[in-house]
Image (cartoon, rainbow, N blue to C red; front, side, top):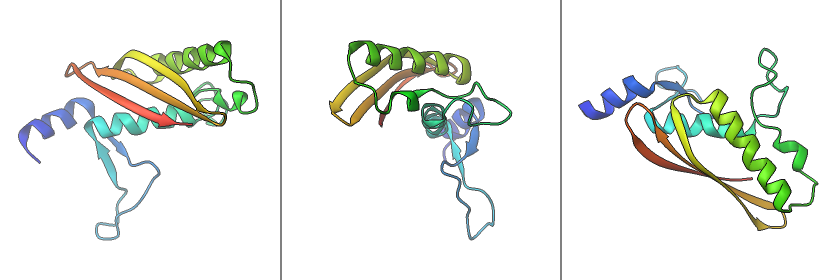
Length: 130
């Protein structure tokens, strides 16, 4: 790991890998660093249902409510708004530039989050099929 990576990790931070896994060699939780940690955080926010976390019942998105709903323009706009709001409250390390929600098939949504890391002004794209 070079000095730039170390500095980036100090700025952005680190967190548990998702899904949690353990190293057999070191007997410790595997960690993610830098932009990868932010991507795992975005995945956790998008996939967590409201009320799923006991101590933080307002954490996450209510995307499970749309499981059997018809995907029209209104539903896609609402999903986009829910994701933008959740990211605003629960991922302070980034500035969300754009959220795109596209219907790929009758059963697959493609969620694309374009964001900038505030501390480094680096731009990234996170794509998540749902």
